[in-house]
Image (cartoon, rainbow, N blue to C red; front, side, top):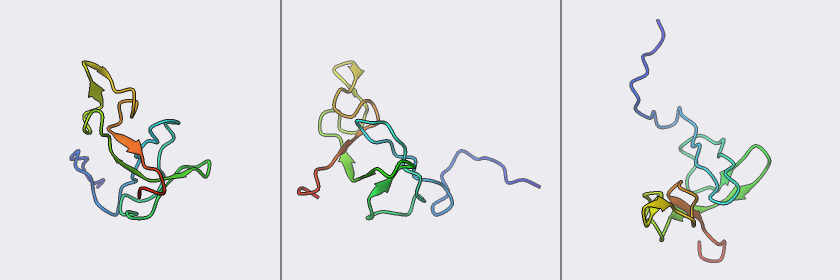
Length: 81
């Protein structure tokens, strides 16, 4: 019998799927890869953090956040990480 989809994430069994704030590529690593950088299928590597503009909400001033493009996380500069 197939496992029912409860809507809850299963740590270590699900993919991260975090999107890059600028290019929107998705991370294809397991959701337990932190603190390693995110990785997309095209080879893009990035670190991110909670967006300072919308504070992770994805909406700023009643519209889609222009800093994180609505994903709630912003790319972190390697020197700041």
